[in-house]
Length: 316
Image (cartoon, rainbow, N blue to C red; front, side, top):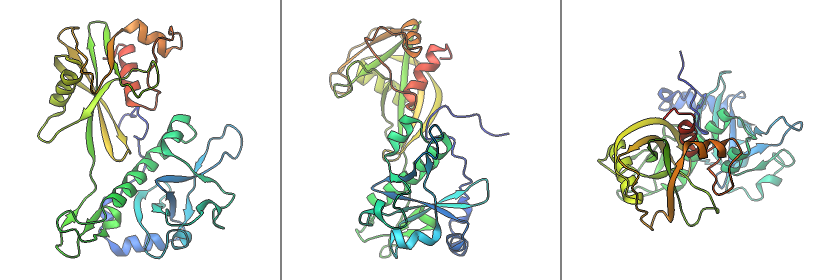
């Protein structure tokens, strides 16, 4: 019996990550040499995407044969083992940013284009499972590009374990990919929920509050702290809703609902520029496309949308 489907974009990754294989250099080498294995190239953290074959079909990930890897990524490529798909094929991701005029390279010209992942998620042109794979790849490549040097002694570190570790050749320090936990929460009071907005957001947009979880802090404590710091809200009950991998660069959004003690609030004027309580009926109207136009909500690809939707459906 599998896990229930996560409602959030970038979740539901279908690959067998086969983490136990990462330390097996011979096996990884065999997979990279296997003509059935595939890789997706990334340029400036954008994946290579194939256009629709027919209108309405949706776009596809630009998976390529491993024989093109060195031609596109160079003799010492940044390549990550992603996992094994349901057909038993090993999948990889590779950074080809150093390739000049990549889209016009003979191996790629006329096939597709490098596209920004957020735009693909918002448009719905790529299936959710493929988006999850691309999110994994983007986060991993981004981590390597940001952490090329040992944080202990400053020496250039080396890629190990199929891309899931870097090791310093000088002091032997080991470095592993990081995931930054973020609490994102929807406060509720009786039949209303609290949404805030920042000055830089599009006019009328309101969303759930969020903030990074600090060292030594539980999820519940982070929820209570962020709500109090940003909106002066006091809560006594926190429940978990779902999580969303967020590859910007590599966060894990932990979605929660929190019951406020009162409806009194005070906007901090720093993180938030405004905020207010919205009734369940107001939220339901906006989700149904029947709002009065005074406010709007984040799109479905954002976990904030799923938190608000659960409230509207009286599941929070």
